[in-house]
Length: 379
Image (cartoon, rainbow, N blue to C red; front, side, top):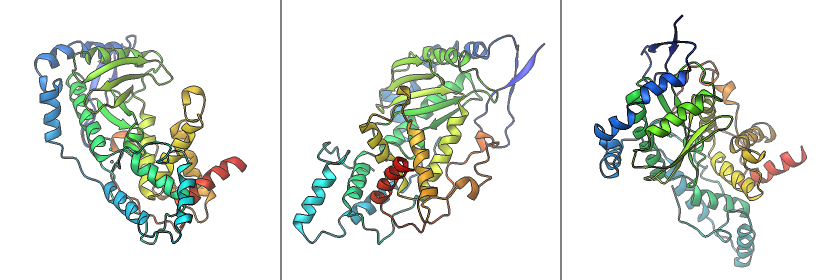
């Protein structure tokens, strides 16, 4: 007896999901294999623009109409705050500088690589909150955190290159699976990425679940085979884990890509973190520095049974919500219950809305960082 297995659709609202007849005794990955059989030949001979560095990638670079966000403005505002007030005592300034340079991520422990200024598909972070005009970041720990953030956060150029890579891959996948969706997830999308962050993506191919133990690796092996002739793909390998991934390096953006299949939870998590990133300007520097601190102490690697970056983000959000008085962050699920409804279709998630919230907490990022350590050490 035949049943219908619905394929995921990337289109806008109002489009109907397509229905593909499927024999329940046949694995879904075998259906995908039939669709993927012609991908290498098709893109080798009929769509060279997506395989050639000179043609395909430069054409995307020349037509990048992605929305701009205001992160470079934040960078300039923070820099101006750093130079707004000079200390009255040169000796005191040297002592503070010596203290700041001893922290992980300071300019003395790591040679500066220059200042850098940063989303599913083409939605950009809009109206990111800026530090208030009277904010004084002269505290030594605050200086170190801000300095690390400015030197290491993901630039707009790097972010746009990742967006272009997503579009190229989506064109390739869409040619054999017209109803698929390709989403950028993780720190690249949430706003917590650095210049060294990898690029996580989720390929949605069905509204129904995909067996992550058996079907997902088979589908990823098929995708790996289909990408062999893509000139910008290097060193691809399938990693079997709780959520299997296809890992490869992009020759153009120099990014390492981790692609999973039908892990919709990651899309929702990224959606939530992105809005917390937008709620208060202090969240991004704090997240980046806390991850730096955790790596320095070798406790930021889920594969070694330590704390994942996502868990560190949740720990910080909890601290900023419930351990600070007044709170730095609200509960966005309570403030916007419809926006973060767990039953909402993933295709209806919006990544470019605004958040209307202003905290009365005036603590510096240095004070918040020390409070974060004290809270999880003693409470």
